Image 1 (tube, rainbow, N blue to C red):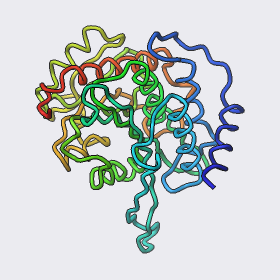
Image 2 (cartoon, one colour; image 1 turned 30 degrees about the horizontal axis):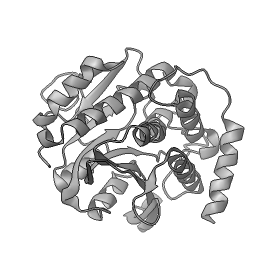
Image 3 (spheres, one colour; image 1 turned 45 degrees about the vertical axis):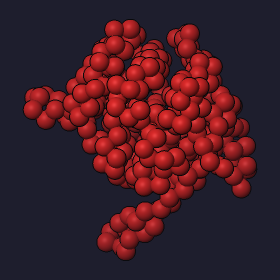
Image 4 (cartoon, rainbow, N blue to C red; image 1 turned 135 degrees about the horizontal axis):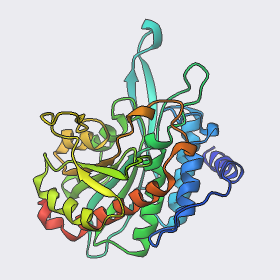
Length: 316
């Protein structure tokens, strides 16, 4: 059954993804990045809601892309299933939902038994009033970035291993990340840090925020070093409730499940995209394509800083 789904999704990608001008990147194939984003946020994916046929299509597509760029499954399969209880609609009894994380690894060279999690959730929302919620920025942008990031590091091996983690059920309360944290496929103490990508595709001012240095001061120099060479404006913020005019994003995505469970140091990369967050207009066509390519490049530069400074993070 899984093979049938995978073939169907690959066929979908050929049909639904047309030629699209992409900013050339020296780090990865930017055309492939945009193709992945367009496929994951297409109407055929119907919002990628957890426990849906379209979620399975998105998952199969991600697995095909991970395999194509050289990511290996961390265990026997790329899939890590989990279940959780959800409230029934209109006062109905609780129902059991079935989610599936996609988990792979890029093996490190010098310290392969130390791991940095590179994560992004691939789920979004079911249609509302008959309108498909494509979730291009939230979070097809992060999920699509995983394959391009992995493609870079399979060619330029990091010293530590990278766990490439596409989480399910983030929109249901970080359920996929919590499931991973409850049953990690490697010893918990071997996991050094997390770089989480959630909404990195749309900003007219070229601003990308790095959240996490307030809770993890040792990461601040790594963000500052990345900001000096980043092709976008990499800023720190959105984590201090005392700062007026900025929402606190500390609890807003999968990194927080790892922090709650393990106090795992994290940096969460995201944009200020409130006007289209959970709106039908969050489509591929409204993504800032040039900015998106540069945001993914910035993610790679930050991961390199993590890899070069494992001891400074305090988990070696």
